[in-house]
Image (cartoon, rainbow, N blue to C red; front, side):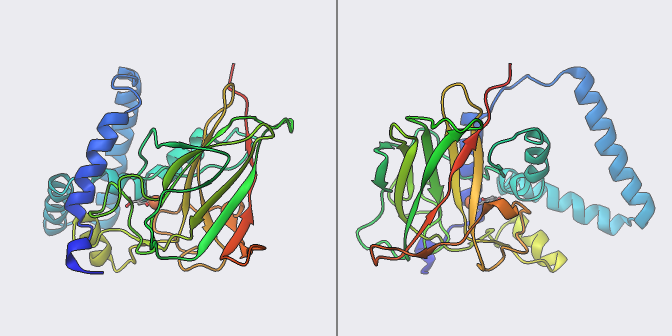
Length: 283
Ligand code: DHB
Ligand code: FE
């Protein structure tokens, strides 16, 4: 990868911040009572850590400098989605009966162009990577096929880069909304993404280096599946045996989300079948 195609923390952080502001679910949905309870408990938890570990002024200053840096680099969306979001997702979806979800991450773009039930995601003429056919059916928990369900997919390319967050990629590269057919079936032709590395040149990278952690997420396909009258699923799918499936820095892997693609019957790359089951909307 050359320097001109390198995604910097500041650039992808700024894009992720802007995208988050555009899609923020609701500005004022948190009551004063909840703010007071949650903020008090978070602050008290920090006090407990300071007492238990006898945190020094040098460590306090390092934390302060780092927090200032996260803001300056625009890396709050990246930090939160890597280290915090997985538990919010766990709590939000603990009562679902249908398919497992996992974190959305910072790189979703709404309203990607629509495609028919069998479609190839937009990609460059010479898009590097192993071809992948991802096919399946969308059903309700009672087994009813969900005709016309939307399967929105977005994923990194063979360099681990996301369109609209890394430079020099076509706008909708490896992003699209596939509309399932009358039986809820879809067939999406794409390429297998590469593992994704958290940008190492910003504050999240500094924390990772200072702590001696690694910066990797396993290769993954992001998907949102939706149908009228049903709860939208936001999920990711991983690849059996892929690097960092066992030690995802974002802790977003679940056993139900690991694919095991086989050589495609077409002879071109791999194929895998994965069905989505959606819960009814809560009444
Ligand atoms: C981050 C990036 C991802 O692609 C993802 O799926 C989750 C988190 C991140 O950089 O924060
Ligand atoms: Fe991702």
